[in-house]
Length: 181
Image (cartoon, rainbow, N blue to C red; front, side, top):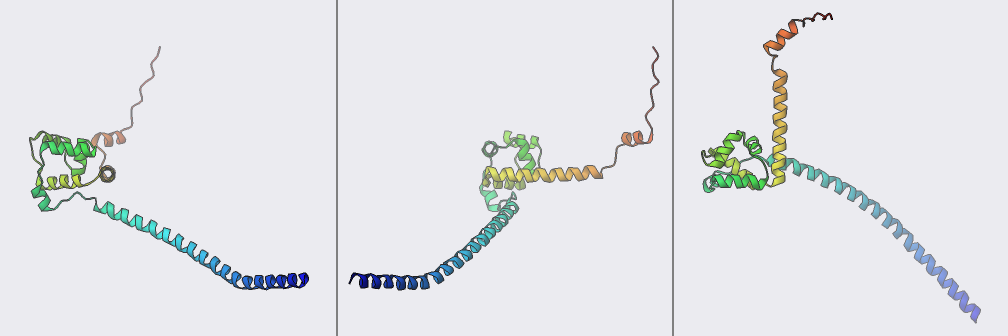
């Protein structure tokens, strides 16, 4: 009886393994294909995320224009102390503020001393500057400086040589006679 029992048990095990293999291998192939699809979707999603981030950064750069609404300009009170505090809070110099607003350092100094008040356009720019963070201001300042460098480079290339430089090109330099000892 022990032999029949072990034979039946072995046959049941063999048939069960066969049934499991019959349903397991197609599922295994299905899981493998799903994993491949998921991997492809993740790659395309990360690529799209990267593109979206670049587009958002470009839009953010375009938005970094110093403008404020007329209502904000009307409501806000810019005192000399507040202008100085704004500049110190952002962490930039008078020269940098002047570069951002297209005014001289002296003008910024006069605003901070209270001798002059900013015009409506410059006041709007100061109010807009107040809304920006340190990083955004640094980015805007870098862009502005880069634009100024490009303009000055083009102007220097177009500028004709001065009278002295032109005269020096025309006349060869005189050779000095050698001294005798």
